[in-house]
Image (cartoon, rainbow, N blue to C red; front, side):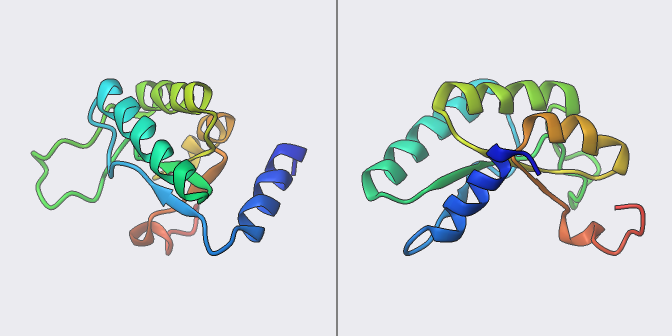
Length: 123
């Protein structure tokens, strides 16, 4: 575990009364995500609550196959990287396949495995 991961873990572990994972469910556009990150950070900073920005580049668990799923891995990670750099925020996003972990790990501070995928052996 690198020192930045350890520092984030220690910061979140010590957060009082809590830390917040927040952001749009799925990345709809860069503009929308940047606006959300700016506003959520302003609120949590004012309240003194540590924030980890959360959004997904792909929502595979949609009720309709015609629903918007997100921008995909490459574009989604570029947007999350911009949030991280612009607002100095750690980010969390989810993976759906083991082949995504390396690329996501280069950007995300926390990798989430969606509940509906937790039973898949390869993840």
